[in-house]
Length: 209
Length: 225
Image (cartoon, rainbow over all chains, first blue to last red; front, side, top):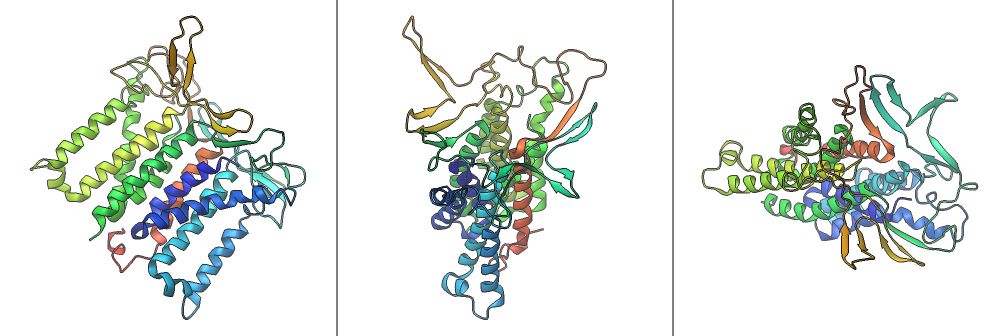
């Protein structure tokens, strides 16, 4: 997985973008935490082999959460969430689910470290990596997805049995390495998130009637 | 450069929330313009060596714009405020924020980086490295190289410095290489690596999600377009 700090940074940016009038200290912490939760499956891999980037990185986790919130707020006669926390609670719940799926799972899916997106239906790790370039010599170069076997395919390094995703909780070697950022662009995401929160505080202060 | 598509995607992610009550299609378009304008120095590269990522890709330019914007919007007969009201002021500041983080900072971490302090100091800087905590090495970061000269004992700090603009040509579709080539391969990257495509998709996601949101007491609905 890319470092959890980077997942959190993207989660914060999604919170700043989508919380709107529900933006406050409590809600941004909830949304940031939602982006970090998927990486907890690394701890699970101490007991279940191949759980890292699989068990909590499955698309079915946020899908189930979304279905639950939809059922509670739209289909039930009296919504528990709305009665308890009002409009604020519903907004925070949806943004937290978006943060989990997009910042928590999505970022990992678009890296070489890959995610078993359809676990437990499929234990294959998937990674969307490649390039998309228009060139005057080569035309359109697109290698993110390939057409094979009657279906679109993306790169895969193996299955939960054959591929070990390294983490500080469950390292491959002796050294435990808790990574903060791995490259320049990840540092930029963290810096941007750190600047966006105070900027959003100013914005909310002037937007409130 | 990461392509303008990537800058715009990241710009959307940053701008949607900060535009706040003033969010609408026109404001978003203005932010896109802010993100594209600095790329004009690509064209200057045709008659000024190393102009790309130098003339408009520097902190000095951004700071001057911020200073002028502050002065302009706080004086009594502000033109921006007079013509566009608080809406215009907000859009301008968000545009500058997006330019700084979604464009400058992202380019800083790409290829040879940016000529950050031009015209005060002609040197390219590149943000590159990693940071981690290790059970064997402790805290390690390689972004800023701090070394002590073995002979003089002098401390040297290197934040990823490169040469000046004369030595650095950053490949771009207008000028793939500094040499003249009758039939150059002009490459227009849309996205390279998973993360660039990711930023584009996240930008689209935030704009779509913002549209689907249920407004609070109808207050946000009227601001939508």
